Image (spheres, each protein chain N blue to C red):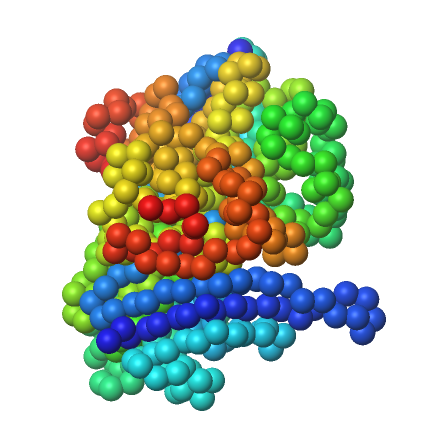
Length: 307
Length: 217
């Protein structure tokens, strides 16, 4: 049984334009992902593709003007707002994107201790600091006294000590050097090997491929493909969606050749397939309606021409 | 005309030396990669080259004349987070034209669309904003461009789009570039030479690609 199942999730925001007039901005159109225990799923997409919103929707921490539809199931049951409130920070933990999520007025050690639920907080905190090469003196330091790398390790250690079964890491790697990245990635691998499910949200396909088991590619608020890591090789012949292929081929270690154009903004979404305006293989049919996600060769894809 | 540092050292007030004795040369039309672990002073060196910081010792030499303080217009710096480098209360048109007036040809070569000029910074994506930051840095006096993690926050397609555009311009105008990045594959793909951090000597030194790869990637 999957630990997390997201089906046809959509998120829109109601915004006031002028006076009492409202407009609806469609941020996520249709997201589908499935996660199992012991598995690392990397969610890859450019900024504005809906990656972080997915994390916030799972945790139930979207702002109050958000309208959500679709289903999110956790351990087989629907994830209602009440369940979200009781599970977050305990069974579902977030490693936030920005180090600004640390409380600036609380010492780092104390913050880590608040995340410990089933054990002696002082001892657990000491142990985890040792494991992450955080100096024991850091315990009494405040976030502004930490380097970027240390702050990030603090955020990761908070998720580790919470004993969560599902860990959502939002962009854990940018700006870190390769040694620290390797360390952070191996921490996630270790968590997964101990039975956790880890969702790693990133815009960096290269680092996602280093640790993940499966890659979910997001584009303009839709899941366009879910593919096992082994399908990423050569010129991307085994990949299912034209956007995934383009992303793979644009990596500096591959061909470094970009496709033209950019991802559409939420208020200017095309009526058919969202990738159609940039797609080389698009036909007239593609512009008529949005394709449904379908299973092909052990992966998922949202393209009517996929084989 | 080349950009050269002679024996540069930098420390924050009352702090230990960040680095000392840095000698670096960037020739026109040359692309140099700068690598090292986080916190080693790569960005600080970039800021010194662009005139945002003044070194405690040593000189920066451009155009065969000693200039240790003001040389800002010929060396330009592009930062990692474009959204932090633009005024959120200005329209894109004003941000773009603050320093000089980029012509239509430059804008189209960077893939900037006319329609974006009337938007606010928050109405553009990171990749779109970064194109503006690059355009405004490429004024007529610019001879050297420092790219400090310029495409780190962007997806691979946008990164390739922007880098191809910048390289084309740099080649045409014979700009010298320093690329500061954690991404080894990008450095390897773009750079003619690579300069690496030496933790023992607190210094940067030139190294071969193979050697840098062994230690770094």
